[in-house]
Length: 321
Image (cartoon, rainbow, N blue to C red; front, side, top):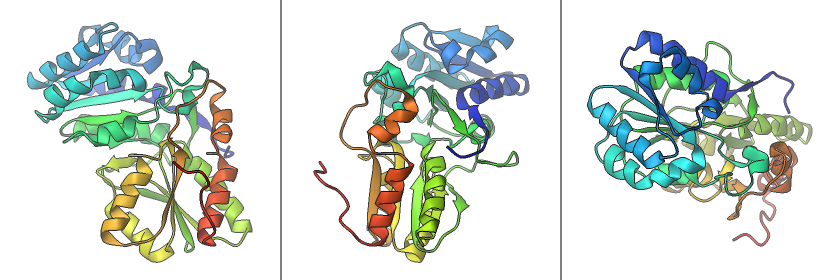
């Protein structure tokens, strides 16, 4: 891991909700019996009259969130990422079809859920959410960006939003003055030979990989693509033109995730090879969260190997589904 402090994205979310509660008297928060884990309990203790624990009834939570939005409330609704997928019909019919201002902020996504295993380690949620009309999707890179995303949604957000957080603490990469802009990426490191585009914790892995690649004579650009939908098409095309090679890294399935979205842009606007690193058509596995990255060949060394291979135009995958 990078030699920088690590902080909880969940704590940042709960604390920012509490701060916003004082500013917006019409802000309400819903949770599905997991508020101590999602950290919405921080808001609930401060504003019990505006906090609704819906119990283990995620579909009811989404339907209620839609009704509260229609009545003029600023709505945030939370649960574990895998459990929100139970509500696809309600999200589609009640929230997205009506383009309502409801913000779904989920925690415990990806393989960093760890020992809870494959049933809880959802790796297809970004793909499911990006497919919903009107839904916007964000995957913050650290606690600072998480706070900025929540501020943005409370102040400027429009329509349905899906924000994907983690159980684990992530390295803090942004400066305190960072401001999230929906539909825009952030370049942490410039480079001329190849571009690594990541989301979430994989950006910190990419930065470590870039340092190793530098020792191999490869100058890698590293971009944080936290806004998955809308995506920063301009930054992707610029990287394609200037570096000629793109590698995507994500704590998510390579199908219908960040890699697929980047490939859509390059196929339509500027053709360059795109190599995708992530979960390969498989479920997760019970184990320590950080160790699972190596188990699934998604660690720093794997990013280095794939990036070096694509830069030198060597064979990329074996037995790839």
